[in-house]
Structure formats: C-alpha cells, structure tokens
Amino acid sequence: MDIIKLDANLRSQSGKTSARRLRREGRIPAIAYGKELPSVSLAVTPRGLTDILKSAHGQNTVVELSVEQKKLTVLLREYTVHPVTREPLHADFVEIKLDQPVDVEVPFVCKGKAAGVVLGGILRQVYRRLPIRCLPEQIPVVIEHDVTALNLGDHVKTADLGLPKGVTVRLPPDQTVAGVVAPEKEKPEDVEGAAAVPGAVPGGSQAPGATPAATAAGATAAAAAGGKDAPAGKDDKKAPAAKDKKK
Image (cartoon, rainbow, N blue to C red; front, side, top):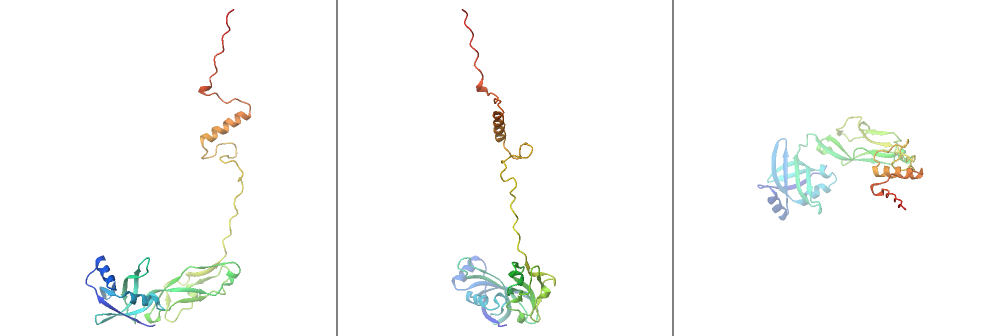
C-alpha cells in the first residue's frame, strides 16, 4: 500500500469562529487521537484530505501525518464535507501501528451474472461493505466474489469468500452476505364483493362505519317500495275537517 504524506499544524483555538477563520485561510480543522495519543487539535489543507479520499484505498489509506517535526501514522476515521459544494470541512485521524491489526470496512462487490438471475431470480447483496481486520499494509481495495454459479436459493456465506492473505472478516462464518432469491409473486386482487353496495353486509344488518343518515335513507326507500307512507313530520299535520253548516 502506498502511504500518503500530509502536513499538519497544531491548532491552539477551537470553536466555530476559529474554524471559519481557518477555512478563510485555506485550511480546515482536524484532530488526531489514539490509544497512546491524547487528542490533538490540528489544521490541514482540504486538498490533502481530497487526495486521500480520491486514492485507491480511499478512507482506508495509510497516512503519514507530519506535525511540527513529529510524524504520526494514521487512518482517516471520519470526515465531513459541505452539503452543496462537497468541499471538506473537518477530519478525524486515528493513530495506528504498522505492525498491529486494524479494523476497517472495505467495499464488497459481486462479480458475474448468477445462473439463478438468468432464470428470473434476484441477486440480494446483504453487505455493500465488509468489516475486516488485518495489518495496515494488507488492507485490500475491494473484496470481490464470483456469483456466476449461484442458482435460485443459493447463498454466499462469510466462509465462502476468498480473502487475501492475512485478512479476516469480522462476521460469523455462516453469515449470509449475498444470495439469489425468487421474485415475490404478486398477490391476486380480491375481487369478491367488488360490486357490493358500500356499507351493506350479509343478513341486512348495518355495516360497521355506516352513517345513521345512510341507514335512514335506506329505510325510507324500502318503505316507499313496499307501498307504505313514510311517517309524517311535525310540519305534515293534517288540516282539521271543515264542519257542515246548519241549514
């Protein structure tokens, strides 16, 4: 693995005001820390951070950080960028030792077209990045696996992966990382009762949620159909019969 060299300066002040001032000067705030390294506030160039991210190993690139005549071997642990311009805003570096294993995540790529996919199946990739452990110089750029022979129902487990020498995956051996599954069948639409009257249920009882107004309207219509007069309202009182005049 190529080691990228990056110059850094100690930063005595912190806070948003100090960070804005650094960015106006063409630098960004950063920190470095580790098991044997207390947190140190630094300032680095955004170009240096961009070079790290654009390298083959990306965030897993080993960096030699020069801090005022002192050199630190680090990995880029976290970083932030502007949501619009994508310019680097901040970086966190963690100190590592070249002779001690590190835990990182690397991209996982499935190569080839699975036989099950040709038959109509779907390749489901459970992990896009795999958590691994190895020495810094052994960090792979990517872990690839050929899925051409996978049929419907076949799966790739952690133990099936062909890993570079010295690299282990921090997952159980039987953990599924990819597989070919059958496409989900569309459920037929339930067309029974599609033409039923809304609110009606078998037996003639009122359906749950039916409004009293709708029920009353139905009763009135039924009464009219049976030849019965609807009950008179308050305003429908019969006028009194006229009395016969005495001759």
